[in-house]
Image (tube, rainbow, N blue to C red):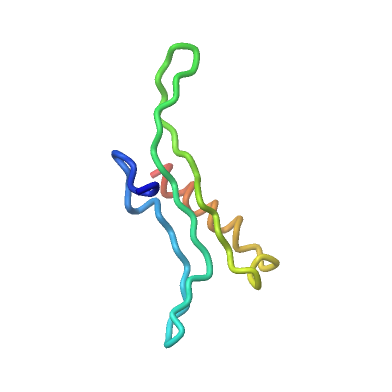
Length: 76
């Protein structure tokens, strides 16, 4: 229910998983659309939530890659 807020976009939920039999999830990041008021102007923005990376892959720079990918999709 936290990921499926009103007006959520499914393409902003990104997971990286292995192929094959184990089919494990190695990383996940989500973005949700929000409206923010700045000096009386309503601005559409994205809030990045739930960044999770497998413990073994944290030294492999996977978190910045996930953040860049969700940012790229939000900017589309």
